[in-house]
Structure formats: C-alpha cells, structure tokens
Image 1 (cartoon, each protein chain N blue to C red):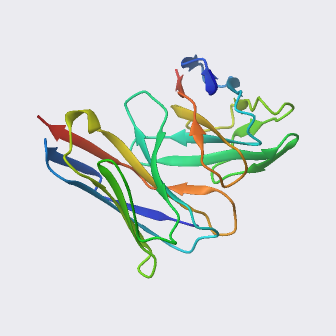
Image 2: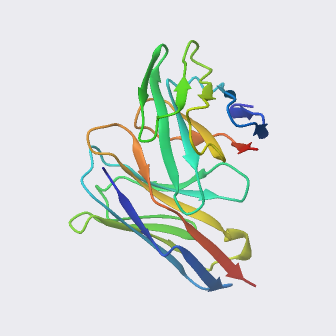
Length: 112
Length: 112
C-alpha cells in the first residue's frame, strides 16, 4: 500500500521561529504534492502545493522544498505565529490511482 | 458562495443502526471523495467517485456504502457492519480525479 511518512508527530515552536515538517513517499502515479492545514473541528484547507518540476515553491511565509531523488518533501513555516497553530498534513499521489495518500499529520503549536 | 457542505455537524447513533451522512457541492466538480479521520492516523480514503453513477472503493471501504446519482451529491452510509464507526468524516471534491481537493467542514459521528 502506498504510504507517506510524516514527521514529527508534534512540534512546538516559539513565535518568530521556523517550523519544519518532513514527508517521505514511495512511488507515485503523478506529480502533485500538496500540504493541508486543519484547525480543530474543521475540514482541511489547501495551504500550498508543488509539482516537482521545481525544487522549491514559496508562498508568503510558507515554503515547500522538494527532493525528487530522495522522494522527500518538506514544509517550512518562517516567522511562525500563534495563528499557525494547527495540524498539517502532507499528501502524495497513490501508485496506480489518481488519489492522494495523506500523511498522519503534525500538530504544530506556536508559543507566543 | 461556492463550496462543500456536510450535514449534520454532529451525529449520534446507536449500535446496530445504519446512518447516512450528507455531502453536497456546488463547485461543479466531477470527482468526490469520503475520508475518515481518527487521531494519529491522518485521513483515510473510504470511497471516491470520478463521475456520476460511478464510484470506487478506497482503502477502508468495508462497512460503508455510497451512491452518486447527482453530480452535486455523494452521500455516505455507515452500516451496522462497520465495527468502529466513531470518527470524524470528511467529504472532498475536485475538478477531476487527481486534482486539488476541497474539503467540507466534516461530520463527527459518535456511536453510543
């Protein structure tokens, strides 16, 4: 079964610090790697996504770094804010299907 | 407003009862999905539908059933055969299979 391994499970960062979440994937059927942000009791919302024809994509304080040869990608949150406190999920395409396989999530807490 | 709606927000069920969760979208998306979310396990795919009158099993379809009679609607029935149905259920849609997924607000099902 296609798997995505996400780490760490939880992360505590001081306000203004950098939050880094990592994901590793197996083989994929197509190239689309999104990150979702979820607040308690809400549905996930797309935060940022990358297609690995580029090694990095930046949107504001959020950056995805992609290493295709290592089959790894990571989310960096610069200048982390208390409002960033949420659970973050990475996802990767499933082999043999046009579906996404989600990581187990990282609960981020940003301390004021 | 375009989006995905799920109802009800909270649902309580007695053991042995079937229950149906509603999912409606007005985004004109062809593909729709149902996920189950449990603490520490991320999002797991139950069923998905690429187009009206077509649907496929996901990774954890046992004990669930779906229908896709209309493009806008993709209801999920949790049957009495589902051994551990208490969870947070999320519906999502995308323009086409494999595209960016938009999530609804979720339904929290509790079996008493």
